[in-house]
Amino acid sequence: MGTADRLDLTLRLVQGADRVSVAELAQRLGVSEMTVRRDLDELEQRGFVRRVRGGAVANRTLDEDDGYAVRASWQAATKDRLGAQAAALIEPGSRVLLDAGTTTVHVAEHLAARGPLTVAALSLQAAVALADKPGIELLVVGGRSRPGERSLVGPLALRTLASLTFDTFIMSIGGVHADHGWSEFSLDDAAVKQVGLDQSARTVAVADATKLGVRAFSRVAPLEAVHEFVTDAAAGDDATHPGGPPTLRALRESGVETHLV
Image 1 (cartoon, rainbow, N blue to C red):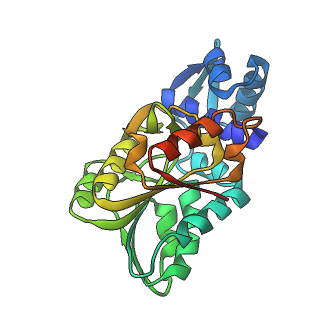
Image 2 (cartoon, rainbow, N blue to C red):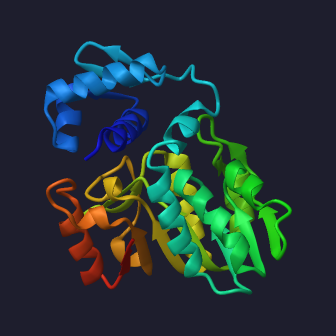
Image 3 (cartoon, rainbow, N blue to C red):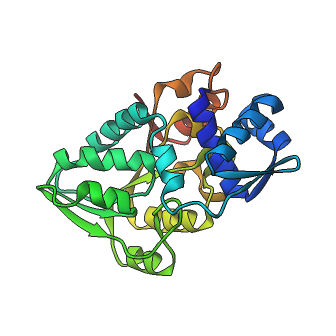
């Protein structure tokens, strides 16, 4: 796992648990405790976590967009490939629910060429990427903007989604695990995804290889709840992503069509 990938996942694990130990992070990431300490020092210097005895806690004093902004610059080329592949799976004329996240913003950028489409966006960044694009009827799902992510969550978002139906839900995800299924680091985001799954005829999940083998805080759904999964080819390399190959096998055994790009 590259440094940028590891920092991304470390930050998500700390934010999802509020407080996490160096030992736990080392076990979850498959690296030494010395490497974890260096990564936490780097994240602390950037203002994203605060070191405490034996571990780290999430820094809740971040500017609202900082958490998203730093991750958006990591693996940008990979996420753009994933975005192009996910968008290519959408038929013109579809009604699409587009999840929040750094990868789904790249999906949004490629969806503009797939019009005509009706797209309901669950993030402010995706809405901006789709605004005023020819052939795109944009709906912005109401709700509370979650600090650090600008994903739209809460009772208003849930009520809005429950009143709509979609042909395809393009779902981002914090973790996918052979035994634990699809999971998220935030309870709020998990709740929105669960309703999105219920209201959509088809779900395409998209995530980079670092998310495979990860058990995030809140379980969203079992593996078979998703129809297709888009990830990068590194997911099949057990040398850099030990959790990748067994997760891919479990997905295929569950009937999930996988796309490696």
